[in-house]
Length: 422
Image (cartoon, rainbow, N blue to C red; front, side, top):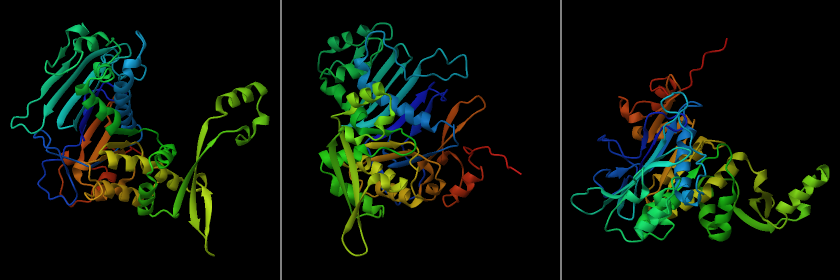
């Protein structure tokens, strides 16, 4: 379970900003399920959080930061000495920040520990890195320092003495552009694998705005035998077909149309690269008036149906793994009632049995009507282009107030400044 994610000096985010999944201190009785952690520092967490803001406010920057955080933890150990960390870009609208490193930090619960892990880095090196772990169950839940990086000499870094493994070899293998966590976990450290595995497997980030690709859902049907679960979810969302099938084929030259229009060299290069590769096709089955069925390729379905099919695989996956799903612009091509149904599934304790979470950015303000105030986060840019985060629960208001109406009326900010045209 994700507790919070913090960013500083990354793209449009200048000062440290934190997205928190911790419930507010409000005494309002909640009708939905909450996620209980067993830790005093964050006893209950939200299962759903929606992020709003005008275009260019930094919503995608937040999602991209989470995506980079995950990728860098997973793969930094593969970088060659001196290879740059290309994805890092500091806040550029201040002379003070352009030469400073960026900071990324996540707090989460995994394997009966509350972990707090983060690092600072620029395009050339990792400047700092830390990992604190608080064990569950003890009366005094105090964080333990599992790792603290020495920015001048990695060999002088602090590793908790009780942790098992080749500590000195892990230090030796950590270059300036490597994360120690990435190195240690990939060199068979059982202790460091715990936070590493949450970041790798329990944080699912979908950054692609617009239509998502359906390949992951198709793979879940082919390889993991999840067709029944995925079809059940699709029917819950009231989609107009009664079955789905996935066919995997090997690409042949006949599968490519218009090759004769290409220059011979381009055609040859394309065929060399693509021939023999596996290609997945998805078909939906519909009932017809006279009885029987007709089959359509998924590409013939509406954009909303394709979007829902693409989301179905990740949603089923996070429900089974107790993961955190992060989706940028989830509203694309979705009917508001479809989004409402997806949210309700995460808030249903009978469905969400493994404490999964959903975080999404959206412009669909209708969703505000069935979310509570601490589930709604507002992002906006200040005078010099720096993004700030605010939870709606930070604003004064009545529990029963019309949040969508007040938001669109500008009472909370984080809306476009659009002048009337006449």
